[in-house]
Image (cartoon, rainbow, N blue to C red; front, side, top):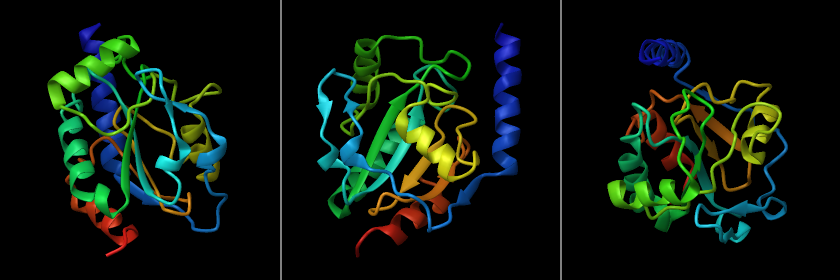
Length: 189
């Protein structure tokens, strides 16, 4: 089992290296934050107003992944850019390697205790396939499948108009200049 998971991780890493990031066309249908019901990991509703008119970095996360330390970098991005209009949104998922097996309560406890996460986290969801979370289903649709997550900690960057601006693989860390430069380009000065 461990060997199989290691092979999956190596395969995902190789895919990530081949296509580390991509940029979307700007003439696509925007994501409508106001018509999507999001629920926080705590069970409370996440108000669409939190995301409307903001640049949003959406990340499918997992607590038992080799990329899990990226939570610290995501928290750092949130602290650095939230006053300028960035929202980091984590969507825990168990789709890849079964690396998010816990309940919503366990996920919340882990994120708070281990990384002191203060950015929004949704309830655990599926991010690929026919039952994909609405944000990930939309991103896959408007990118013709190119922005579909390949592994945990895949990143979608949505501009303040709700358009998919770029996507980044798991190998792109939150501190990567590729990612921070795109964020900087989308935020007001």
